[in-house]
Image (cartoon, rainbow, N blue to C red; front, side, top):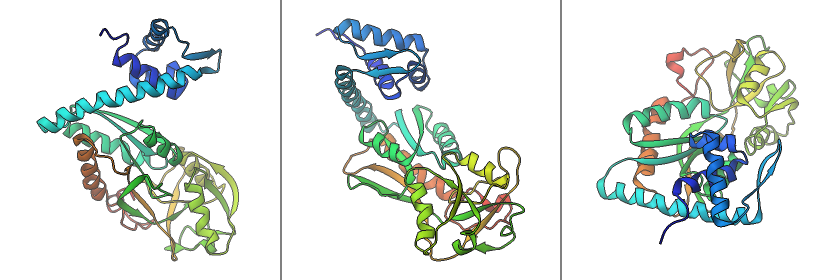
Length: 319
C-alpha cells in the first residue's frame, strides 16, 4: 500500500491543530512556516478534505473533519513513537523524542538546568519543553501531547499519578523597605492587612488564598498577574507583597528592584513539586531515565530546605 502522507506531515498537522497558528506550530516543530503550510495544503489536496478554516488575523480553526483527522493523526504518531521506545528497550539506548511539560510558575527556575544536564548526558534525546499552567498540563497529559510533566500536587485526577520530588513551604515576597521585611518570619495574620499581589494561575491562586481562608482571613488583593516575573517586579516597586513557593537565587526583580524573602510561620500546607504521569501507563526507557534524573537533580538543588532572607546564594540554591 502506498501511503498518501508522511509522519512528518502529520506532525505538522497536529502542531497547527494544537496552536491554531502556522507560525507558532513552525516554531514548535523547528521548521519554516512555509514548510508547515505546504504540508497542510498537500494533506488537504491529497485527501480532498478541508482541515482548517482560515480567518485573516485570527489564525486557523479546525473544521469538524479536521478535528477527527487530527485526533487520528495523533494516534498514528503515538503508535509510531512506540517503535522508538521498543528499539530503546531492546538496545538499552536512551534516545528519541521526549516531551516534557513544566508548570509555568517555576519553569524558569527548573527546566533549563534540568534540560541542559539531561541533554548533555543523553545527546541522542530530542528534548521538547512546554511551559503551561496546571490545568493545561493535565489536559496535555490526557491528550498525549506530553510524555511527562513537572508540577505541584494540586488536585491530581484519579487517572494520573504524582511522584513527589521536593517539599516547598510558602514564603512572603516583600520589597526591601516593607515594614515586615526585616523579620525572620511572618504569619498570614501579619500579611492580611497589607496590599497583596496575587499570582493568579489556575489551582495556584486557590492554594495561596486557602492559606488565609484556613486562618479565617481575607487578603487585601490590589492586583493580580499570571506572570511570576511581573509579580516580583510589582512587589519590588512597592505595589504590595506576594506569596510563592519557588525561591530564586537572585533577590532582584528583572527591573532591578530589590526583594526580601521571608518565611511564613504557622501550620501551613506546603506545595509539593513532583512528576505527573498517566496512571497505569508503562513509560518507555527514555521517560523512566528522565524521572530518575529529575529525582537526582532536584534533590541536588536543595529545593526542600527552608531558606531565610539572609542566606548567601551558595546556601540558598533554588528553593
